[in-house]
Image (cartoon, rainbow, N blue to C red):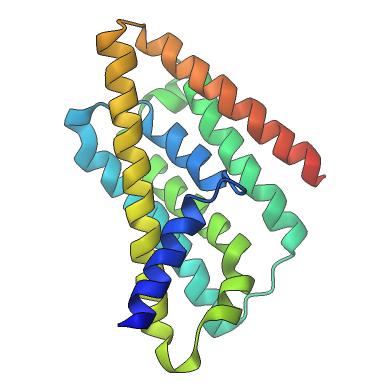
Length: 191
């Protein structure tokens, strides 16, 4: 039971860590276009991200995937920049159709990339006798943290769009621009 709670806690704080805001930025850009009535679809997409993240941890542990940490650390803010771009260029047909299979597949892919950034470190933490439980517990912690972010964003959306009566397009553009600026800083720091 101690292992279960340790890895749930580790997964939760992996996402909520203010020193590494990549998960927050990605989930923020993913969640901003959604309304509370679409929360099931949004949580499904977040779960796909968690699934991708977990797959890369499993792959790294069992197959010792050898990816350049330089490229992975560079790809993480690039995924965030691409997600933020979807908020800036929402009128383009490519970004407009959020019902296609493309966005869920992209979300899994981005989850894999983000997981690869943490995979080596995580592999050093997992006890050999409790690999499955550790991976599962960590994924639960990641998912719980991301759901907290999602509900925070949905509440913020409600306040901005309903209570303050701001334009949805302007709100999405503002969030997209802020996140894109941070992603670009991360990219240039890692080049």
